Amino acid sequence: MTQIGNGNSRHRVTLPDGTEVTLSWAAATDTGLRRAVNEDSYVAQAPLFAVADGMGGHAAGDFASAAVVTRLAEHGGKAAIGTSDIDGALRLAVQDMGRGAGVTDEGSGTTVTGVALGLIRDEPAWIVFNIGDSRVYRLVGGVLEQLTVDHSIVQELVDAGQITREEADTHPHSNVITRAVGFHEAPIPDYRAIALEEGMRLLVCSDGLTKELTSYGIRHFLISGRSPEQAVHQLVEAAVGNGGRDNVTVVVVDVLRIERPSTPDDED
Image (tube, rainbow, N blue to C red; front, side, top):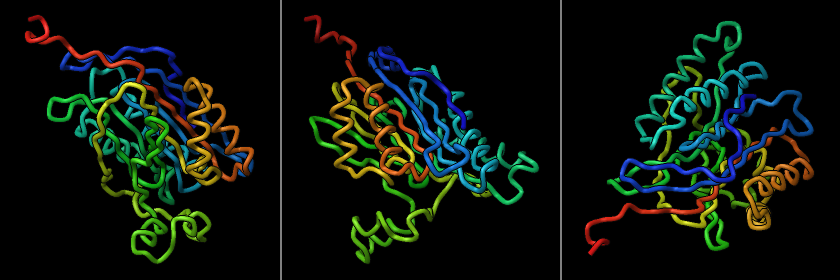
């Protein structure tokens, strides 16, 4: 388990185009009730927030998730991040895993998912990325939306219409993912850009949360938690209380304010 970054109740980021974004965030991780080791890791350090869920055995999974968040954290403190920065960090993390002699002999890997502030066609945006079945959600105006698509056997069955979303939650192969960072393969993340909105709340989490809470439950705690810290505490507590079958890691980010740079037209 590697934790990089602390919660922050108010932090201003100035993007390259001059837009100032004020964020608030919190993060927490818990081993859960059935695992001896926490193989999850996270980085919560503006402008990037990510969660990695390691696999491949206790030592190997912990090593893999730590390698990913450590490389991503090298971009912490930047004004903005692009997809090339994320791609580069993940490639370096795979190289780091390959140098873990004695730890990764049986192969190791990790999921990774997160959000990063960046510019898309010169417009401020969140860059959402994921590999595996950890997830990113967006809450705006009381509406919860899952922004990532799981790379898993059950998701493929759902997409093919062979099982329902409800059946996927209890499917015997629910832990089998189809894409990961590691195992000596080139990492291939999915990317999605979403607009920045004042008042939006983002959730980045490992599947230890989504195994224990339905979308309705996640929405309830995201709404009831007035601050990111309160929401994180309630989500982790509920997931562990509902069984805690896996490590649980949660990052919640709020967009408090967006201030666009003035233009000559504004001054007329």
